[in-house]
Length: 106
Image (cartoon, rainbow, N blue to C red; front, top):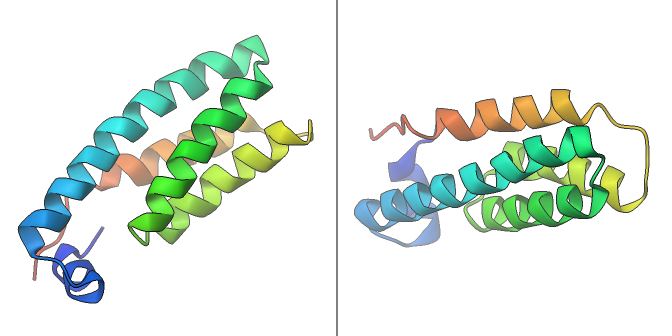
């Protein structure tokens, strides 16, 4: 669960602004996840790398390290044509992103 208040304080933003950024991130990431899940059975490594890169960068900007790291696994494997259980990693990524729909404000 994301502590929005702590993140806002760390980033120097108002809580409402961080909540808006997180909401925008989740919406964008959901679109990227849809593309990732479509690209997996098709073996479309370019789409996997591109969409994972998008999630990775946005997550890093919001200091969402776990999400950024999972996206990096997909991106790196796809770019380098490495063995990867894309479905498993993408599912873990989706779980982390879905959890952002319930941010904690202390």
